[in-house]
Image 1 (cartoon, rainbow, N blue to C red):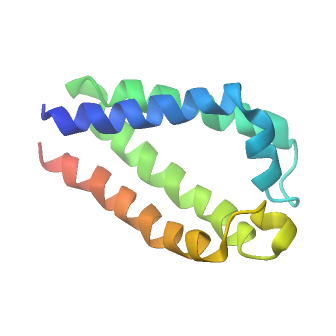
Image 2: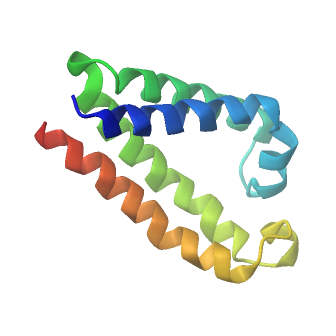
Image 3: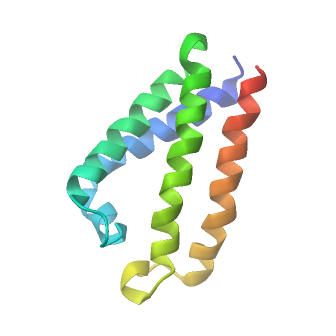
Length: 117
């Protein structure tokens, strides 16, 4: 498998770990309409770590890619929520929030691209 697939795996593993290291940062951007925000933050951290690890083995790589694409699609709700107002933006400039939207789709495509290997 290509080295950049492991880069992707490391990125998701690290991001998942950050959910446990800095949960308050994630709580600030969690949409208010979602129940049990702290649980969802920890759950998404575990899912990111597991999907990142699953990318590292040929037998689970494709399942992990579909999981990552689904996860990134679900995370779009957080990105749109952050665009809804000053409090939801948590101090992040609007231009960065707008830039993150196409980045999400770029990350989805990056994952999808590995289905051919």
